[in-house]
Image (cartoon, rainbow, N blue to C red; front, side):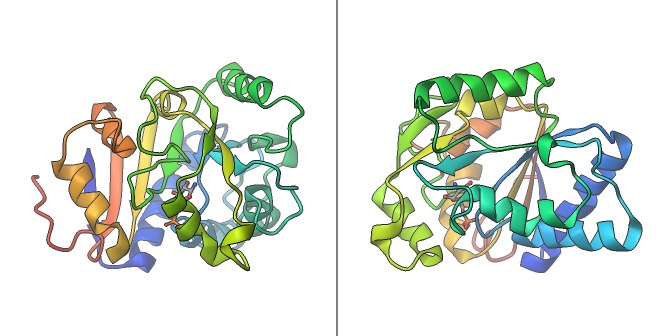
Length: 245
Ligand code: GLP
């Protein structure tokens, strides 16, 4: 894993945007895997800024998001459909039909999981997957204990994850109990992975990721087995952590 150490959230976002824009310019038809949460918001702002200022085009880009809450309408401001439209898609020139998220309101959830993985495969797989990390090491919504071979599936969210995400809702009761997430095997199939980590609340997770063992109890640890992972982490996320380089 290649670790890029940066000062703070702003620098992490700029660095991630630089990297991603370079990839889009090198391959205008790139398939991007995208994440939600607080972490990539700054990256998306930088991409919009660059698109507006420099005209980097996303007309041929295809995107796949990691996850969506179960039962939430796309027009609910807390849905990841809404988040992506608001944080990125509405502000760049990507055609709506090129942007894909799992459907949290499918009639048949199991079919939806299969459909999503097949869709990714049929469009050539993900070239670059952007990831955040949960405090308990989750990636996407793959909670601790998720088998590493899991494809896209339905998960029951851990209480700690619901608590962590409650800041976006009016109350914890509104936070959904289930989500649909790209599985760990789906994520690991990406040709390249870019993990963004910022803030003190993530330093324990970083410590485990860099110095712990590979275990299903800490989902992100599987990334050590991926041949092409770049981590951009800020000083707070890396506080007190020894980096072997
Ligand atoms: C959320 C998302 C993940 C995200 C993580 C961290 O629950 N499902 O994709 O990476 O938790 O979120 P944040 O970036 O807000 O800390």
